[in-house]
Length: 163
Image (cartoon, rainbow, N blue to C red; front, side, top):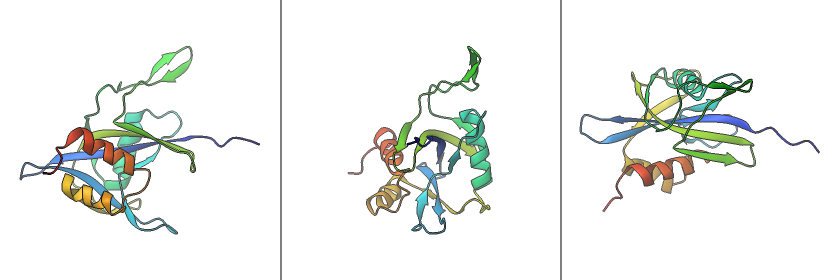
């Protein structure tokens, strides 16, 4: 029996401070044929030869029309380095999620971006959510399963609990 290949994915938590001083996170509607509509992060498969930065930049532009800015996640080397003939990139992601059923390994990063999201061929229905709004979506289980643990982890690490 042959083993399935693990497919690497980059998921991007785009954060922005709004005019009211509150941090907001970008989500988009997931409306893939045959799937229940829910919300997801901008994300996609990392292509052969791409660094994490390159894949994140490409996926964010394809799905939102926005330009990747500063990656907030600490410990990500900007470029791959050649070691014994292999190109390797070291990073400490915000979180990693292994989808055992679908054979995806998603690396989540936190970043800033310029521009405003627009509907593209890849995604639409973009929304900037506060931590409170995000918690409501998570509680209602209206978030794409791969992104659920990433967003819960992000909220645990980056925002105060509501009183």
